[in-house]
Length: 385
Ligand code: SF4
Image (tube, rainbow, N blue to C red):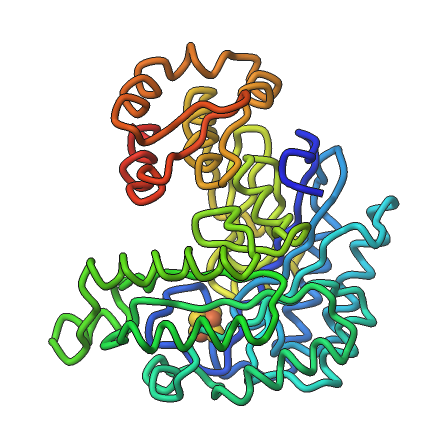
């Protein structure tokens, strides 16, 4: 199945697991360290309670995604109990549902993977990030390069046929040669899917602190652009399809879950700080783990706040999210989703961007040109305005 084979009513489930063994220097995600097995159990129970009380969208559930945090830190049996609770409410749940779990190579054994496979996980997203010990250490990752190799080998041995790897470029003092080495080694592992992210310096992180004090030096924009270009050329040559700005996949292995976000389909987010979206309404849970857990065990709502998007806001969001995808935005799908004509709603913006050579129309779709891909944020801002 590919993205536009989705029905408009297909939806996804995101499950936030906020536990990490240590905090990476660049990370500003909603995570906590040093929580024990009992905390994990209580949190996973809270997730099941939230799931059992949730109002589910009508339509097909096509993806469940355990993200974090470090979901692989939690006992796979607890993950299995949650999946069983999902199956109990979703009667048409079958092997076609993509069930992904994010795994940190420093937290897994072959046995972990075997159990995860047995309880219903069918896709792994393994955070490799870099293939040099010096960079992994500097980022405060809890794993080394051999752990990455071992994790992939163990995942395959445990029967996983859909394995994604994540890497980050633009690390402090990272040379172009190191990035080449990282990509080459990742490709040698034969991933079915690759996500490559440019390192973002987030306020309040040790990384931001180091950059401000001058102890960490980020590669300049030219080197970042060279790294991105090298990745695009190398991965395409290796037979992976560049289906979204930061994502590549073998044919048939594009991530279903992320595509639901980019097509503005409904998703239900469970857990501390998780966001949900359904028919123009977005809501999110308390970020605090203890507060979230207490709310569920005492039968209260975990909802922190919500917002309603106007039809115009929804259409704008649909455009800039959809243009992230190589296949662009289908005019027909836009019409079906909003009962509006894309070219009438965005006539001026599309006209200007076409003249600038940043977007093009092709076979009923609007998509970024290759120049538009290089200047994607400029294009997206035009639709956000
Ligand atoms: S493992 Fe992931 S979620 Fe946890 S601190 Fe590192 S980057 Fe953040």
